[in-house]
Length: 75
Image (cartoon, rainbow, N blue to C red; front, side):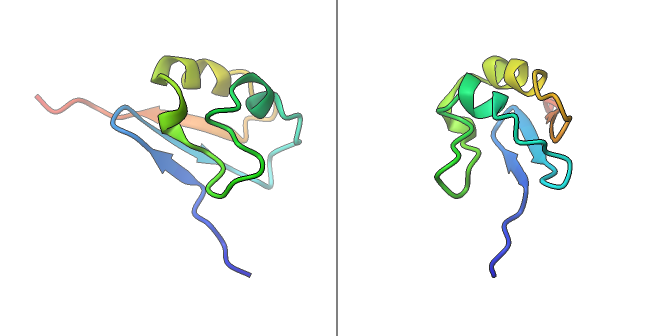
């Protein structure tokens, strides 16, 4: 069985997903289905919405399985 890396990045953020922590409440997919897609691999598409909306949805994750880290701007 092929495994997939559970880290997704765009120009602004890196999103991580811990499947062993996830309680499958589906708040991510129900709240922002263009980013968190349950029937497609890779299931997180950071190009599906604006970074601020993605961050707000991740903050609603009840288990903490989804986390994000802002990328630092280079001066």
